[in-house]
Image 1 (tube, one colour):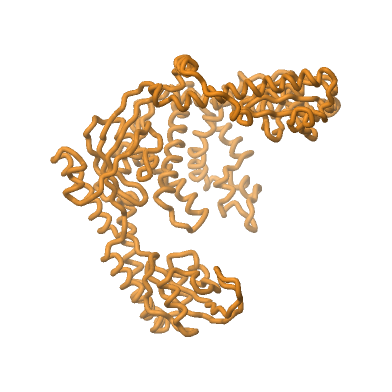
Image 2 (image 1 turned 60 degrees about the vertical axis):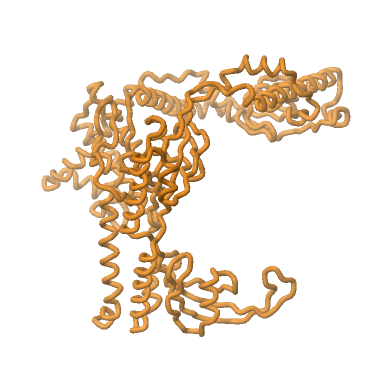
Length: 610
């Protein structure tokens, strides 16, 4: 035991150091290099939401995510979890306000009945209520009346009471929901009413080549008649300086010291496999660093060159690649005859079975601080000099300019959908410069280069779109005229199977479909399905039916009427299913309206960017 600890003393010291650094990073909010931010993360209906309240939601979701896998939570994933936490917090805050507004309360009996019949999931997973690893309901029930357990059940009561009050609020809403017999029958027919159809589908795109170019008068008329289609919201343009979060030479040197200490421990007798399981930063760690068999060229050049020059059982000195520092152990080597990539003749190929320990080189807190300081210096210099391009030239940094973008839309290849940058762009005056804005891989200093007020796309700019829309509409109309000819021919006695021979259009048939089926080439178009199920006579033909891309013509080939005896048997369950769906819709509409009417200001992104 003591011998093993002696071999491990340097790596263990490194673990303590890394853990200490990680604690600092965590206390800074996962990558923020600046001081403690304002405590308010949002405002809901005039109520300021403190970080501590938000953090309870965030940490709960974070723990759930961490339990799913051992993969490190990326900054992008952390942001996604923050957004989920904010949504949950908003929902709970608004619901609590509604509970208070409507005077909802629950009695102790209601709480007791709920806990009796609906044990909370957290308690079902508690070891104290399990027998042989499974939830023991009798053990759970027996624990409820025990006087010594009263403090525990008081805490449980506090936990479930808010949810019970929300349930009661929802139940009050549900009392207004009604389900008619016609709705129950319609739900039954949607699934059980079946038909076979034949159809001809003609797309406008198939006729575009024969459509003449629209005249200037047609273009002007379309543009003026549909001007709202060319309305533009306010737009912005940004100047950007980007600072990549890359490891410094010092970070590479420090990580090299770490890998060398691991190498020394292995040379002193520590087991390579155990060390890989403890220290390696890639997915092979759980396999003791094992990479399996591979041939030449499969690994990056420095790794490839090292491993194929080693003897079986040999452990390399640290090898530097783009991924970090590696220690490589060659486990086995063999020669096989195969056709190498890019060749046609088989030849002897040497293959290696190796394991490795990888220490990735990440930018340290000091490096991130330095990058942040430089970004802040450029931001401050820009304010002093008057524009970002002058400051960028002084510090020898490239300044890029975005295209026009709308609020909360894609900005450019660097910023993508950066909500903090978008908020800055539409909350400031032209010429304003931001403090550094952060994402997973970079820091940005941005300058608001231009704000373009809302208006309309000029006809000159919109002309291509107008021409395309006019030609699309003309082609679809032509498709309708063509199918009308087919309809007349079928009405005059032409057999549907002769459509292709006479008109050159395929006549398709379906198997039995329902009122929600997707038809090849047509999807679940309501007009097509409606026609199929409103026709009563076999071989009845519909007139051409317009859909989003053209016209279709439908022939009823067969119909299966639903079994009314089956309807009688399933009526109650169908009623329940329809009621649940309508209750969900009613609740969703009600809550969406609550959210729409609420004055909500989300400051999470700005909070983490401080």
